[in-house]
Amino acid sequence: MAAISASQVKELRERTGLGMMECKKALTEAGGDIDVAIENLRKNSGLKAAKKAGRTAAEGAVVTRVAEDGSYGVMVEINSETDFVARDDNFKDFADKIADAVFAAKSEDVAAVMDGELEVVREQLVQKIGENISVRRAAVINAGEGNRVGEYVHGGRIGVLTVMQGGNADAAKDISMHVAAINPAVARPEDMPQENLDNEKAIILAQPDMAGKPENIAEKMVQGRLKKYLAENSLTEQPFVKDPNQTVAEYAKASGGEVLSFIRFEVGEGIEKEEVDFAKEVMEQAGRS
Image (cartoon, rainbow, N blue to C red; front, side, top):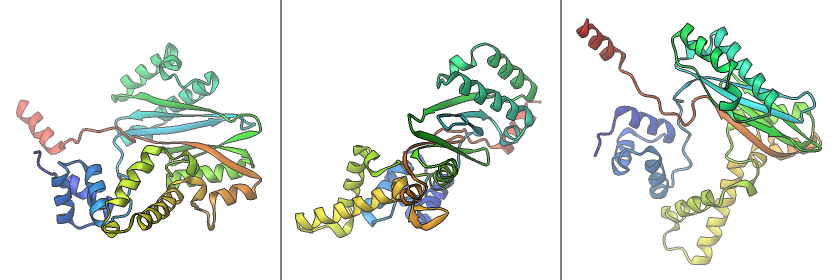
């Protein structure tokens, strides 16, 4: 079994708030898999849902474009190797070119959009700055008749497109801002995948206070906790970030609208980045010179 690293323990502590030894034990039992360790902790100790991993693996930018009438919007993620390059004007100009091209093409096919002139521009930029630059993904949302797309980008790193039925541009932007800040799992309770509900139910049933409960009581407890889980993880049921006295659905309704869906991009999410020991790398280079 692979040794548990200090960084793994640190991440689990940050995500759960538990002590170092408890986290190390949980990681050991889970074979070093942080997500499995969290699931086991939730089953064994009633731990609430853990925070998402705090660090992202790659650098870059998220850029959005929305039609003036709100009828459609696009979002792209462009990656660089370092945050320094992501803040460079040349990189930002390239990211804007990609967003404009996706907006014009209304296509999520990054390879097709990049084919030709834009790929040449990317290669020239790579040569100029000495880092790999890649266009990772694109999303295109068509609002549909009577609907509108709202957008919000936070710090160039988190982007959101939200679709509302009715409402207005300000409300759509505010709800997109909420999504950027809170990162709900789904737009509405009915959108939650059955797989997620089944997994959450298994976790609830494995918690200590469920032991020995009559079946009918246990089922009522499960349904109550699933309802709470859905409320906490569904955009429309969450307290609105700018006014916690109302839910997002209530805020949307006050503007004459209803939330239908959203897409959220965060730079580097889901990308594993190799951890580099720079001191060791320098010593190795010195040894070869």
